Length: 154
Image 1 (cartoon, one colour):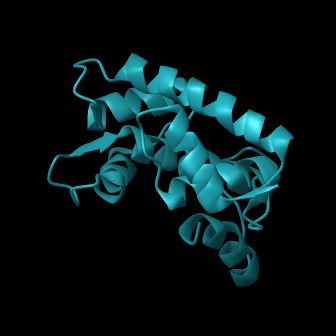
Image 2: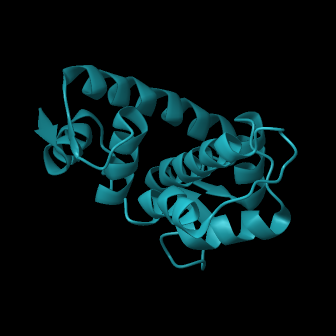
């Protein structure tokens, strides 16, 4: 078993890209569905191959090869992944995941992964409650908090 800091170091060692602990935590959560922050060899392999897929998606939608994905590129990437977000949500995502606090209005690779994993995870949790696939769900306060908090505290 390796912990989050060991995973962060290992992933950074395989590429020239450094990964924030938050991104590492979201990747770990994706493959364990817990906040334990330790993974075994099977999960490590899954994380490693997942990052290769994310890199391919990032490069495909970074059309100007700037090393950043702007709002239109992010919208297209999310649509390709099956997530249609409103312009308001898109602006919030870019503002949240832009390392410059919204000045560049673009998202770098590490934050792109974090953004997509957040959208993916929240959408999956929402779909669990939207059993009629109507785009609406009813959450009690506790269920809402348990749905959202793992993505906020990752």
